[in-house]
Length: 256
Image 1: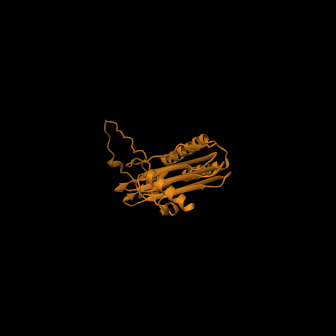
Image 2 (image 1 turned 60 degrees about the horizontal axis):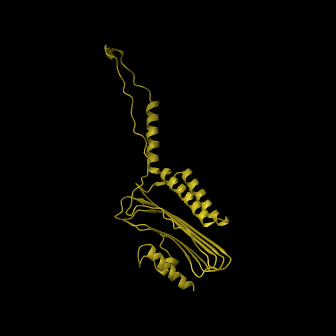
Image 3 (image 1 turned 90 degrees about the vertical axis):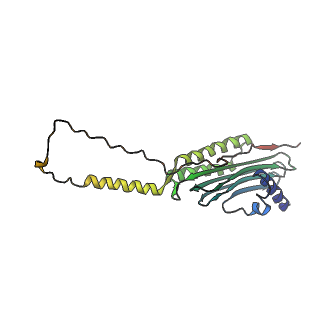
């Protein structure tokens, strides 16, 4: 039965991601290291199954084809199945092919009073160099968000409440990635510039020759120094298709 379920889910996932050949049964069981696929298969009546997967990948090659997918399958009575997948992909440089895929699939088969919920968030962000990373505050906030995702396992929420909670948490991840990505390389450059300026301020001024001092009727004017505002170390690039956060509508099946 498990093998048949893997075949079914592989077929559904392949169709969701764009066609046959993208996902096979062995892909579901052993995804590529750059993929993030979570599957929750629940066949035990009266039970609740919760699966969560998160990955953060940095891609430096010419092809960006990471897959993020959540699959929730229920075939039981009075059961609940939840699958959540979150993937962050930092793309370094200018790849030739950018085709990330994101899918969430919820299936109820031969169920009575079953609830299946699947959601998948994928964030694909272009960065200028491999030193880009989250700030300390960004890492702390991301860890807190992931803890709140996992804590949903212990809350008896309706499917609509699950949808609202996960949407809000996904928005928080988006904000962290928007504001808390920095480049260590730029940070080192800024520190060196500050040290150079401090060294120049501490150097004694060279002695002047009074005889060489001249006076003019025109007052001297000193132009204020102008510096360019600091820029963030990371940029967000549009992909084809553009990076999206994809969620499925929660599904509920009730059979008398």
